[in-house]
Image 1 (cartoon, rainbow, N blue to C red):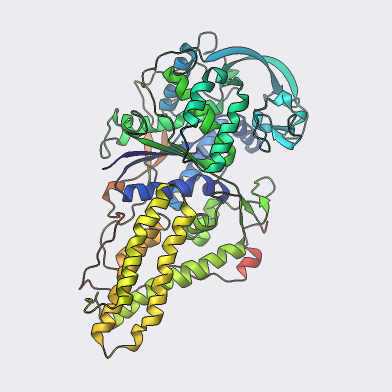
Image 2: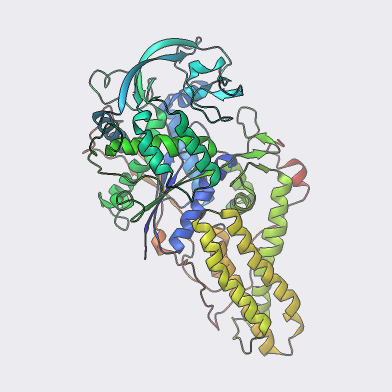
Length: 611
């Protein structure tokens, strides 16, 4: 039975192009999961967009000599193009600077405030002495007062996991220019997390099937919950929709309050644009947001540095909106909204032992990588060698080894020689005349892999799933080597049976690998005589922001902007064996994956840093 599955993907920040470390945490895992869920017959809604508010945008805009909006417009387009090239199958990839997003964010703020979960407080705000601009928590670092870690941020310590305020840090300094911030009094609205602690803890303790590192970290956060500021002293962001605040140019909502609400606002925008088979259906989003786990499931994908916002802050906002904390209350116009089913967090991808860093030029941008190597080789590397459960290191040597030996030699060569021999000797898929025990054993192992790989993908165990799919490829290569069909031309029945068996397993493996390798799987589908779309790809469309019926404070002007979306209902990929059809003509195949020069592993391409 088809079930609504929400894939909520972390919002990439629009202050520059994204690098491969970013997409290893949020992009590729979310797309592998979504493609599998669609193939398994579930009704997937995959949403996200560019995160465009906050001080980092202002800092980068100053460096480039443009306005914050101009910077966001520029990098929104770059990121949309890169994610489309990578084949990330969003139902809607939008942005946080839309009129719809402003209105949805302000509706949640007003309702949480009305329910009593926002409390005004005077706090100490960190100011840059050289610019007079407020420094966001994450742009201040220093020594953690709890564990002594030097490198803690102003919002939390990644070493001990405790929530912090910038003024708590020992020897605080700006990450922008190293100067010591000045602290001044400022009034803000704080989310009353202690009033939501019991409800948050009760929910978290039901999440027993999460990745252990994510669940442990999230439960530890409950030990020291404090009210958290959800407004900022900044002139770039969403206005605070309260009397006395709405017209203040120096007060805006915290970028992390507005960004996580993007999962809801993007779902609503998708419904208004494409919700009924590509046509508007303003209420369609509700299927993914109402009814709890038993009716709809919601999976959130991000890197480990964002766990706290998805397992603590966002669920707390949802509980407060629904009035399920100590202060009670009632839900707003959107009704009671589903909490996350799972927070699927990845660790960090490093490069030759160092963190990816744009400022230090230790970075490989997604666009550069795609232009040189295409999408599937990167998707495969992230799946089998990425940071799923622990930090992983990208080196050119390992990337080339995976490409040459696993994709080109093992998978690509299996497809090429199976199709080539069949084309040369039969011209079409031959009939299996008499099967041997070896034939039957291989076919059984291949078909059984659908249950094994599917179970792993459904639980976000991508590395194990890819490894199991490639195990089938290895079995097929061993079968061909032992059967030696090139030596039995004088027995066409046996030769035809061997090649039919090999082609059936190639088709099975193509299906098993489709979530990881959608582009090459489409080519294999066509090489085996398939017509039409096997694995649909996202497309870029230019849309116009909603001009009317958007109620919000200080909503932006109506503009055109690009979105990612796609018609995934037309794809033929399903999670089951598809019996190949005897007599289907086969053409001479072309190589799927080119081998890369081993010397590239020593230096990388000319445009890439060594690390």
